[in-house]
Length: 115
Image (cartoon, rainbow, N blue to C red; front, side):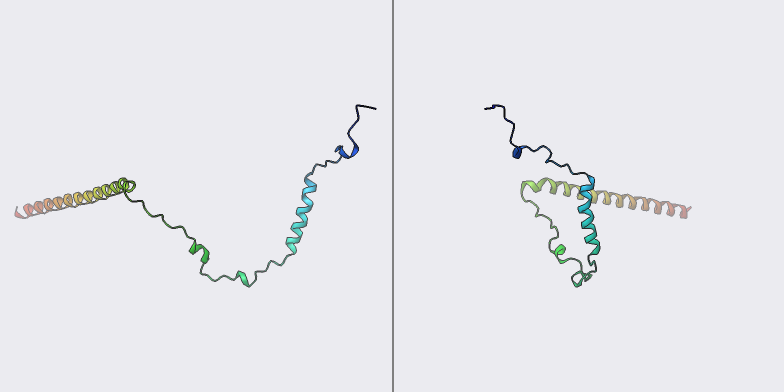
């Protein structure tokens, strides 16, 4: 017998493969588009706007995570405290400076009146 036998016809895939081109892709899309154009797009009673907003969004709104306690919280607390204290001191220093300037102006006016 012949040892160099070719593959049987049923196993041969030559000519069976067909590449899709742009035209092959457009016809199903065109059919879907035409079907969508023909649909009734009128809003039904289920799409009535209540003006309250979505209840689901209100329920699922993100919440702040609880702040950690202990050593993890110490550094941010210390920083916030120092910042707040520094701001309060700056404001107090400014008020004192303004009071000293006002007193000096008042003394200057008093001296001018005496002359």
